[in-house]
Image 1 (tube, one colour):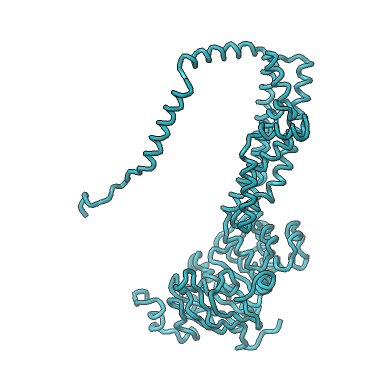
Image 2: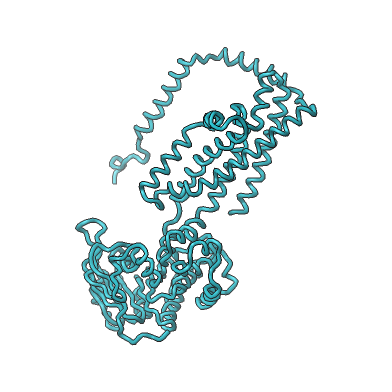
Length: 258
Length: 262
């Protein structure tokens, strides 16, 4: 895979609006341009629509209005088969890992291929040999011992589960990875390790990652671009270096936390 | 805050009180209507003791045992076949009835069907099937398939509705098709419980299969009923003891199976 040129746009979000209850928008006409490389961190207080924003991109949440353009296709308007085709190219990492607990590690990683593998093959666990080999490679790449492959996901610690979650997302060979609070259920040390891993994957595999994160320090350390949200609107968009205390005050309200 | 201003820690729930009072009143009313008296209960105990005394010792004559063995073997076959097909059919029916998977029209029709299956006791269903397909094991098997489907699919649908939606969401986010989500996100979560339900159903089908014979559905029920009517209480006891042994063995085996599928 050749690295895309810097600045090449992958995703264009135009006037994205989401109302869970009519007249009460959680996202207020957000417009964003996401490049085909680097880590983009979305920061902001709880309940400000960060999660809703990235869930609109892979349509785990249906937007009320607006466009989400990826390769000239409006994701907001897809359904059925075309939506599944689009989802195959978008990996997702979750706050609570969302592994299928009773499946083994390698079965969870291979789930990343379910957009390509017919159900009878999945049922008989007859995944293509190439996929299985790649799953083993990925388990290694996310820092897990190969012995973990046949262990059940519910036997793993939080940090190990998140590594499996990341491997599952990368297994899709995605053009984009969404990470929804990937470190919020982890201790501080493991959080750093997971962010380190995500940043490394983005760099070495040339995958852009959009990460929701409420830890400002981690965001500044690992992201090349920071988007600050508050009240369903983008109030800061720029490099980590440009993020001032005044911005944070605006984003989080008050200054006691500084 | 002064003590007086605090709300009561354990407020009185009037609906609960009214419900208990209603239940107590109805019990008294039903008792008076049905003419239940202590004297009748005591005479009944006396008769029961005489009946039990006439059962001993159990009849172990070779010809009787032979007859019983044939009946028991048929009962076990009825139970196993009914469980196999009943459970197999419950899998799609239960999934169709789960409101978090199936569209509304499908889940409501499946629920309606399950409700009909559950309305009747297996003996009543047996009578219908004996009329339809004639005396013998087939009627018993069909009746128990219906009751197995009623029980297993209803509880299985509930298990599916209680599954963790986050695991399903994650698999759906990979672009997996509905069937792939079913295979890799839903089934792993619910399969162990489904096996548990099936094994439990095998247990109760073993019990029920001893009974469908009374109305002509095949198995040990017919010899048991005949023995009662001919006052061969010693034969009755032999059959009852064998049924108890069978149920105990089934209990042991089902415990093992459930552990395997943890």
